[in-house]
Image (cartoon, rainbow, N blue to C red; front, top):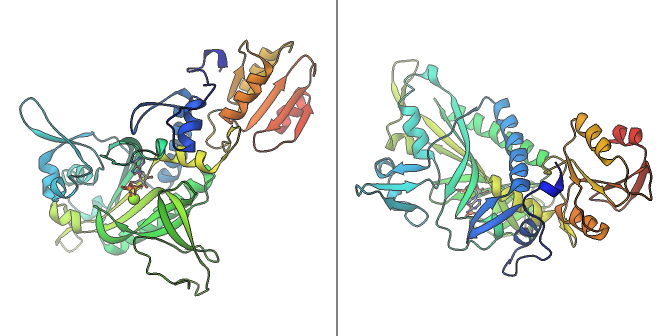
Length: 405
Ligand code: ATP
Ligand code: MG
């Protein structure tokens, strides 16, 4: 697309009140805009990054047999009372009354809503296992929403729910999801640690968080630098010896939680009466698991771990565009080059704006698209090729360039 048409323009300076790097850079480069504390608009560049992340998640979940749906955000009180979470989760839930004085909650998660859905449609072991997911908004009354897009009061999550006829089947699927999550995060470009953790308002069982080491993180984890074992500070019992590989190699680090998976067993299904008939005709509660990824948080987390003094450095897998084509004064046939790149299926942001060379190059670094191509009078028919993550500049002909990309 032509950058002259892109909304909005980059800002010369970062927002004064921004405390975190992701807030500064994402706002200055035009990926997000703040409505109020913890509440963001995803602008065209930001929305493109979300699409990329969601598509990676979608591909990996579909591979393990999950199906995509979309559940409502406005929930009746009665369903939340069935598990006792109307009261238990009072602190995080946004609650409201309509004009008929009926109570509702805005979704902070969807376990109860998913179970209400499936209990209307399943009856026997032949209906199991079942795994459904959606990409949608969550509302949480966050008291410390000061970390840019890392902690919203309204944010995007991918949540997956699964039901099974036995604990063994649930555990098997739980491991499949764990692997799918590792694939998702490594495709995005993250180095994640699978971290044992408590379950908050969700469960008393051990859960697994996917944590990224980052100085700006709000979590603290202890991990083994030798084998990768990790535990959240909340449940870590102290010591320096790794319980997994037995080496004296435990380190402490600040981290960002990008995903969390929960093996619930039958706790919720018993309370909500989600039963099935097994092969012997016996009625049993289903085994239940829940699996979340913070898709909007992932964008902020990426920026926290991948930037320099000049701006963001996207990985090719989640970048808003593949190539930033920077047209400097006197360049010839830029439109032709733009079209031949597009014809190859390459996503191009073409800086066709009437501003100085310095400003264009500065903005390219700020936005952080992985490949920068510069065309100018000086270079004639040749194109300058530079990766955002490296300093090396190569001068290429169109043919050489197309081969390279
Ligand atoms: P935290 O401990 O950071 O408050 P959580 O453990 O309460 O998060 P979960 O209920 O596990 O969050 O939600 C699943 C995922 O959703 C998290 O791993 C995180 O990536 C994301 N997430 C949770 N809360 C927020 C938020 N307020 N803003 C953005 N993303 C969030
Ligand atoms: Mg969590």
